[in-house]
Length: 97
Length: 474
Image (tube, rainbow over all chains, first blue to last red; front, side, top):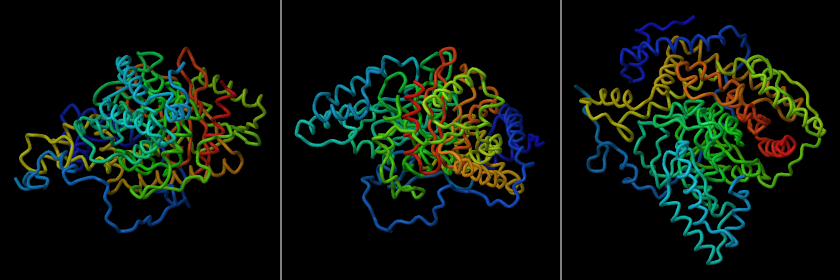
């Protein structure tokens, strides 16, 4: 029975780029543990001899021709939702503190 | 009684000039405004809808052929990219997002003359079974304002039942079209995986996400699917359409055998919901349909399987919301890393954070084999059980949900209890087969949904069976 510790939750949050309040850590510790305990019922099922199903269509290597097409979308359309831009580029914060 | 004729009749009358598209759009917008208190709608697309309607009427006057959905107003769940309003997926992190292009499903409907009039509420990013996870508001059930409409396409289903438009679009990743259809007394169609393009739809769990209609009757669902389905080079996971298409259904069950799913009729099913489903089964038998019980023994494990695969894919799909290219960006971040952390923490709601962390856990090194791989193996077992069942019967039948619409707030403090609402819908998504929920009576004034399931790519057969069943159990 998986019971997440406070440190487990903080580690998951760090991996997922989330900052949690103390209250959130406490909540998620209980809730995520309960959900993991529920899904653990799969661990006692005999699944020998089966191959995993990652997708259901059976399609392999769907390709299309490598041609430029005009969908009527301009660079300005794509940039208008960016929080900050400069000279037609998306501007981000500095990488290092 | 609905104020809207059948979808195909609306289109014929707009083409003949008997009905004006501009009047239909005003009628839809007026109904949306009159029924605001149900909070089904996030935003209207009124200016663009009025312009498109006027253009359609002018083209009709010039004698041009408009298309099979000429002048038909519709409502899209707010996780479809559309012009003329924001697209938010009911999330704070996408508040203010203006789509640079439209979803292929929207483009295909517009090409046949349909007109988007509004965007419907949902659980943020489609994570939920009640619309209570919307970052903006909770939609009320049209039959009882103290109850939820189901989710995640709850705004779309409520809008159709409130008669705001003849049809609405939803998405179904684990039951998000069928469950709200059941809770509101509408028809909800989840097509075979890959039949409708998902280009321009906000991704949730990519291996199970599908697009489908919510309507008042099966014929309307069929024409909408017929228009939306078919290959799109912007979605590389698609299958081919049936050569006959999906419209003009015969509505015939002659010679078909229906299997009632044993595992959905037992423990956990509300006895009054069960009585409604049994009454529908009796009517089918009286009408001469062959009905027998079938067992798919792994079905009780499908929800556990789904709540590994779905959060895993969610954690991956939501990594793109990082506050840099679009969406909410926290103003008080010094570095890029801080900007990611603060933007995501402030922008995502509780359920998105919960699913991201569960997904991160089950995909982590050391846990992958125990969770994610086990789930993908169980998925194969489920697929084999569906195949075995369909070697004996043409269609499967059961309830869509174990209960009727629950009260607002009843499950919000217990996410696991909320997840259990999907117990009868998720298996279909894991396997990819098509399914539909149609109304089957009421319990204390609240609608019950009957679910029909067909083999892969048998969407036309499913719609035919649903049309007949709809008539028989009415």
